[in-house]
Image 1 (cartoon, rainbow, N blue to C red):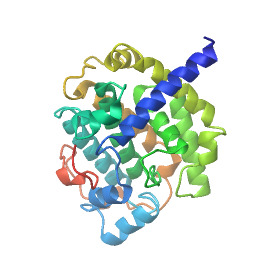
Image 2: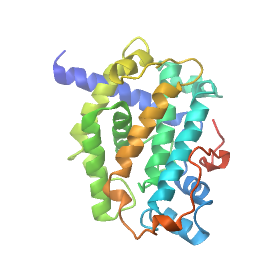
Image 3: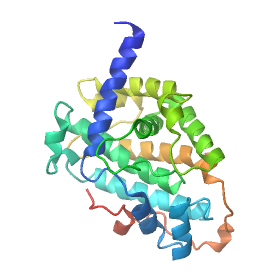
Length: 276
């Protein structure tokens, strides 16, 4: 098999896992419900409505609030990840998984949940705009890049930055379909998917991830360990916070924002869907 065929095969395997994970119960986050719930302790209804209609940054939500909400979301998801059984064990889960190992689908499902939450609070548009079960190519592409950033694939960071710049420049409320499926970003998506697919072809996804990330404790036992999920989430948070999408709009002076304990995790911050 040639190198290009090998990459294509690995990318296809990752695409299959991503598709299965996205269909698991509770994985998709409702953008409007999440932003309303996450911002209700910090903003009035008018500002929240504007954040949903445009973006938190364009609505002038202070960066300190965005950071706090992101930290709470990471804490919430991490607490759930480390203490629950596989998403695949929920009703209908195994029927959808087929040949994809349950732990692998679980891992990617949790990564998708926190990736969506971080994307929405850092002013990305709705990633699942359609009502159907299937995810479109553009959504699959950006989720692939997000997971690549979490895992530490450097070219994924460049891909995410390019997409963010396109959205910011065009002031659009959707992903740039052409760039992610046929244009500038597509080759980057395929390379990242190929890398992730190789990691997932290991005997256990955990062992593949352990080779990609220098963190001890990538073990699946009814939940993901704090040692992998937390640093991966923080890595994506840091990258998203650095992008152009966080900059539009006028922000209040940080001194005007009441300090909030960063270790506070609120059950109601989640996402408008039953907690998994």
